[in-house]
Length: 224
Length: 228
Image (cartoon, rainbow over all chains, first blue to last red; front, side, top):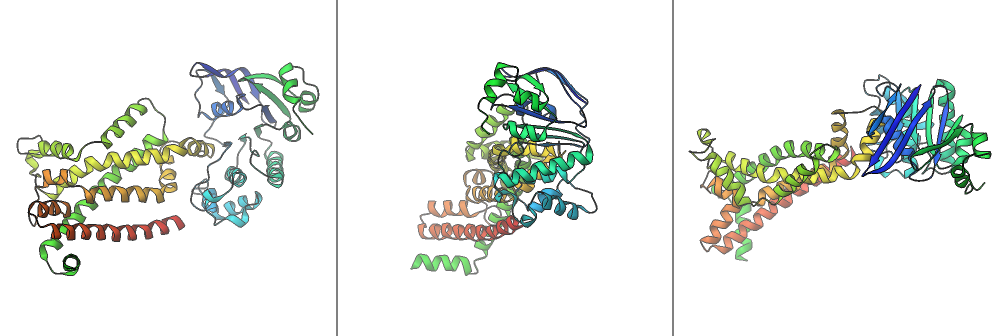
């Protein structure tokens, strides 16, 4: 279980994130929804240690073991797509096969020899996911994993994450702008605004019957 | 026509002094670029890829050193290496090594600043991506070096260009000694002072042709590196 305790992040005296208490349990999928600038990405960055909070602590997350993080715009290195995957598989005997398998899964099997820096935004996101899934993980933190993918790409990513979850029963934490995606993929939804947790709970309940005015205002823009 | 004849004579003739001048020029430029790259590229990656206390100060310092006048660098090295200077016992003044030291002083900030600027643009995204797959600390350096291998070659080449074209510092610490420390630029300056403008121009064009040849070779290397 990951426990977020009294986290405060400030930048130039502006409050970016204020989370007094939050828990993420293994065997569950969490979707964090909210508008741009609501603090979703900062929360993931604090969990990954790339942003240092001015106060508070994270407990139960060992970054050295089986934790994977996909930033919103994952970087694709200028070497081949295959090598972009193999970089995570150093000292693994069958690294070539594992990398090819990971690329096939995300639908990039035909691009193994392409330069990473020639990929589109959506392809980069799928490449990033392939890099994570090539190595066994028990915790996945994904920052808007389908923000640049097309419908087919989104379908592939969601399918793979579902498959990963069923196989590992690990902890999946993803951010999204899409309430529909949260409804499809999450066991629990957390709504954030202005760096604070406004409301959380079962996706069906929260999205169909929001209690807080901020959540209601956000969901009023949701077009089916 | 006379000028063209002079250039051809210089390039393909058998003037031993000229061959020696070209050899010293290439040796000095090669070693100064090599040492500057070995120091400047990792330093630039560290500066550009990381956030740390004092980063802004260091960046300003490197950028200030970009404007270091070659004669000031030459003067510093001259004072260091002169007999009464702190490194006088090594007897390096008026040697190619002294010229290399002065060049390193000039080119290293240039390579460091160019590398830091290049790497800094995507540093946050690269760092997040590497952290996301469990690659942290010093291991990151390898991927920065691999990813920017092609632009790094351009930076090294630009450093080499500065080195081969430099005159003030090498004149001061090398002394333009015949058959020892005379390089293309100091030879051009000497010929100009002697009023032998045609010979000076011929030397200048020879220098440009050598630069063009080296650029062509490096471009081939860049293409191979890009395809790798």
